[in-house]
Length: 274
Image 1 (cartoon, rainbow, N blue to C red):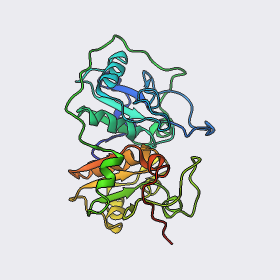
Image 2: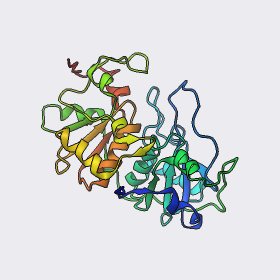
Image 3: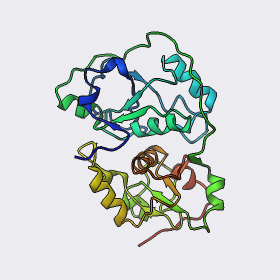
């Protein structure tokens, strides 16, 4: 199976813990039952994407500012030169969100564990009962200014352009045929957007082979050589699509951080398709 550029296998991680800083980025929808894989990869620490975020009255896990992110990394004992591995207990659901967050602050050495904790367990590798702790506090400095995120107002201004807006939500929600899981949101999609459900990019909790992903992207009509904006329900799987597009070396990718949680609650135009 062809490997994705920024994914790391359980076999590679096993036995090389000293070369990586491992972060559990598991996130669950509010009110969701935690029936996920149990245990912790030895030495892993938890990065809470809801807590380490820019505060907002209705939008969770918005990208943190550079000072908050630097403080969080320093407290976790992560330095700018560390190779960070992100995983989650779903497989590859929320880990790419943390990967994207590190990339937004200029951290190049960051990977996603393909298959997450379920794949780790399936290989027979050991787990720990509790999270690890940093051996010592580090000093983390954020890198370049953010360039891979787009705001509501910026996206509004681009609606009449030829920008590729790619929606990671399931097809039913994209078409407005299935209710949104969050209360108070309208159904439908951003006008002119393209449906590319993140769930179709994953099989058995792992990314599909690169050749299959390329075929899915190609059949959707997306041109990775043109600018792409990704969106989803709240910015989680939009970052997952960003991870995949970056793996195919697309050059101009932005994530709409507020995603449908913001758009669907606003008076912005909505398209409902048949």
